[in-house]
Length: 182
Picture 1: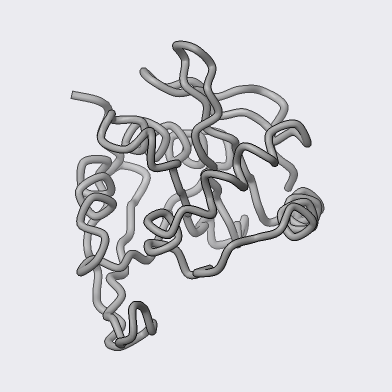
Picture 2 (picture 1 turned 135 degrees about the horizontal axis):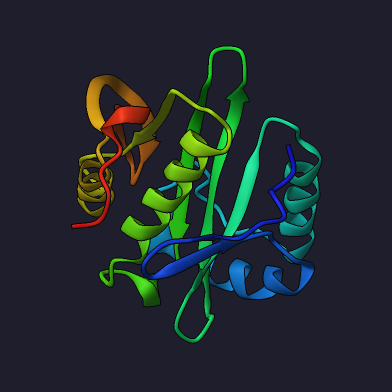
């Protein structure tokens, strides 16, 4: 599933299709060690690598990938996606990253809420799940809880980060649990 042509707007951000012109800025923000620390992909990408990734996800019918941009100023600030969309089971996995210059401004929360709303309303998803390094990424954990995700379990020593094994929290959101902005 390629990213829908219609934009999705929240209170602070707009989710839209990723364009070739976005890739250089996205790659620059993605290569920040603090951004990479919260992701499973923990190494920088070359421009060729990010182009290949963009083309691969664009062709994947089970992914809906969005660029996150601010409503005010229309700055490109990150990416979020619904991946491994299973139409039969009506579920998907959520992923997001936001460039460090845009942290602590509510953009991640708004993008998460907007993407999950899209999944529930337009893709008819009943369940969206994610994994997060709760120990090293408490900011993300708070975002997910604000949106309505519930912690469902822990995958013990599931990832090796910063020279040691880390537990991974598994979280889920049912369609009726999505909370709208306060």
